[in-house]
Length: 324
Image (tube, rainbow, N blue to C red):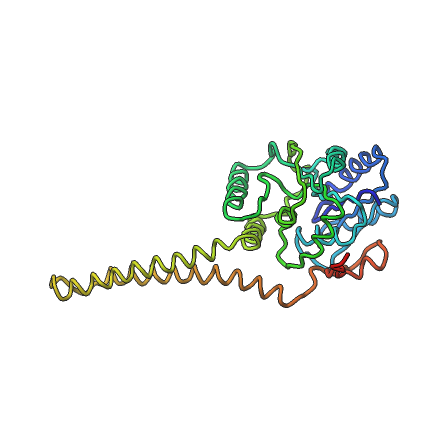
């Protein structure tokens, strides 16, 4: 297989037919053996029925149906586990990522790159708040991590089979695919494009899911929050020690002491807040360690039209021989 296109789907009933029409039209122009893999991430609408219909009428189209909703990043992971293309395109199913860019991405990959990601030149149909928070997050992540994660990019990109094999060796539960691909290295470049507004339906990424994704990205590639908690603890302890010295001095030398209720309450609440914040940060990291130590499968496949050996992954990619 020359090219695989992996598309996570969550409630894309209104967009799926148009997406498949545009995508197959693009693939028809390429002299490549290609496959399309739709990963149904627990959709509540008729997305699965449409996938089955498309797969029944086009041998290039395949579907994978999860037993429940496991999340966007896990759906991408499942597609990467199962696909067989020498090159793999990852894109969303809401038509904000234009299928017409695939030939350019593929041509760029043939120049000797292992990763070609699509960089957003503009973002249409998104609120000013979402654009501002996204801009802030990407720049914050670039500053606090040692990994050079490209700014203003999503998961829309093409990668080589070499990168897919490397991703299969990264078994962490809290996936942040774009960060993992940047961490892998190899030669990477980008193409700019104007991102269209969503064709129809409601976005699968709510603000709570975006916050969770941001937390996964930060905790997966940066220890800075832990350092901030440690430095904050030392700083607060220093301030508390200085206040203690002042209290002793005021008691014995200035004869200026009283009940001190306001200062006592402020100190207790301040110290308590800092401690709770530090415990929460540490807890986030511990929770991720616990999730990885349980070694549960990333996903469970309920139904697929692919070969039976593909369905045996169940979120556990086969172990690769370190000797190749």
